[in-house]
Every structure is written in structure tokens, then in C-alpha cells.
Image 1 (cartoon, rainbow, N blue to C red):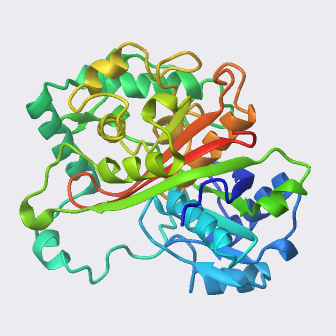
Image 2: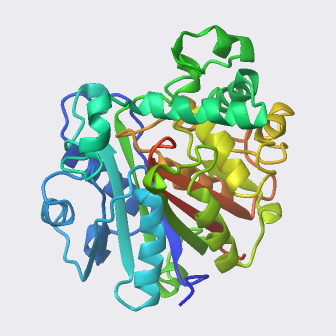
Length: 386
């Protein structure tokens, strides 16, 4: 069963703060939920499905349903790391298409900057006994992928830096972005080397915050006094070490992307705007290759000519500043990728970065690590009249 055109994003809300002392994760989940509902013109009593991931406190959907006072007919707590919320949109659309629910609420919240990192990650994971003894770090695993991409294709640190530069050009127009200063390639290269070949400015920000989305049926969307965004296609895929035969130069987008495009009946050439998960600059480079926006190994040259700059680049990306400059709540960036894609399709992005006549957008999430295992998810969205 295809989800194409069978569900709409009616509400989207990003928490305005990047540091939130004195509040619990549950409070932030509630704040963003109410924000998305207000954006759509709905209330908590309208919600009959709830989606959350590992950032939600307690028993996840159960605890948060009680906290928010929700009466539910459908729950989903799929956990794929930072891509979870992209996955949730696809799952919500499928549940709506199957008649399981009408109004699905998706929330993300976390307070890592204030010191609350949520649940301990990866407890009892089967790979732990084989990997943890060597002390791998998230940063080190991404640096490993960057080194291999450089070795295989001649990618340079300057090319990676160009991605951060593009994000900074967009973030200057976002008054809530954590980093708002425009930077240069030289600024990135002169920032401290934190794990060769990655510099500090190749890394995303760490912020408190959150966001929420409201996915509704076509019948509900028709009755709302709000421009909605149509869900056209979704794909998801894990990528893992393949028992030690891992290729560090590609991501799970190699499989999730074609699935999403196939369901939407579109190609990369049709996309007007892309929200690309940007935990590190290498994440963006590999992802745009795997999604088919350029040839494998050509990502470095692709980003050097201003392709990622809005509003007139070949592939305007992350016009809110992305995880590299704006916001990376709970160390999970998939939610904000969908939110900015919704803004672009509604024509609500900042005028300096709004893509003209934006009618088709892509949002992509990456959970886990490029150097070990990940869950990738790709979402294709269109204007209500698409």
C-alpha cells in the first residue's frame, strides 16, 4: 500500500530556545506538542495517535500519553536514532492510510546542553562486547568515514568546510540559531582539529530544544484553515558493519532514497529544496551522493560551487542553519529537518533563503553512526496542490 497523498502534515513547531534550564524533558515535549497543535488549529482532544522515540521519558508513548492526557487508538515508539522522526512521519501516514487513526502527533525533546542526556544509550547491545572495549567515540567514527572518503575519492577538508559555510550563510537569517555568524572555509580549517580530518566547525552544535509535527488524514486536512503539506513518499533502511565488511563511503540513504523517490514517482532532479541530516559535514557529503543529487565521489566538487546555498543554488539545503549552526535538540536532528522542509513548502522560510516557488522538498534523517551502524530515512513532501 502506497502512502502517496494519503496523509498531510498540518502542524509543525520548533522550540524557540537552545538552552532550557529548569524544565524536564516531559515539559518540553508538552510545549512543542501544544505548539504544533496550535499551528494546525487543533487541540489535544483531537489527537488519536502518538509517536515518540528514545528521547521520550519513562515508558515513552505510555508515559507521555498520560502526561498529555491523550486518548489514543494508535501508538508507535520506533527508535532509529536521529532519523526516528522522519520514520515516524512515514509510519503515521501508513497508519492513517490503513484507517488506524486520523490525527497523529510526533514529538521530540531533549536537554543535553543543560546536562540531561536522557536514557543511557546502547545498553546490552550485541556489538558492545566487541567494540566498546576499544573506546570508540561518535566523533571518531565519523572521522573514520571522512578519512576513507578522502582516500577513495580525493575529497578535501576545504570541500567539507564548504558545507559548514553554506549552513552559516543560512543561519545568519535565523535569529534563534545557536551560531549566527557567517564563516569562511579558512575559519573551519583554522578551528581546532578534533578527530583527524574533522575540525571543530565540521561538527554540529549541541543544544536543548525540541520539535513536533502533526500528521493528519486528507479529511481532517480539508477542514483546517491552514496550508498543509502532502506526504508523497518515504523510505527507510538500516546500514551496518556487515560482519566487518563495511563500506565507509556510503550511508543508508543508498537504499532509503530510491524507495522514497519510487513511491513519490519522482527523481532527485525534481526536488526544489533538501533538508539533509548534518551531524557532521561528512554526513551531508555522503548523503547527497547516495540520494542521487550527484555521482558517488563527486560530492566534494558539487558543494564547492555554491550548490547548497539558498535560494538559487542547485540544491538549497538546511535553510534554518541545520544541525551545523541552528539546532540539534537531544542530539537528534531528524525532526528539525522535516520542520524546515514544511516551512519551505508553505513559503514560511526567511525571505532571504526562501526557495522561489518551492513545491517539492526532501527531508532525510540519519541515526547512529557513519562508521558503524545507522538507520536512514528519506521523506518526500509536496505542496498541498502537488
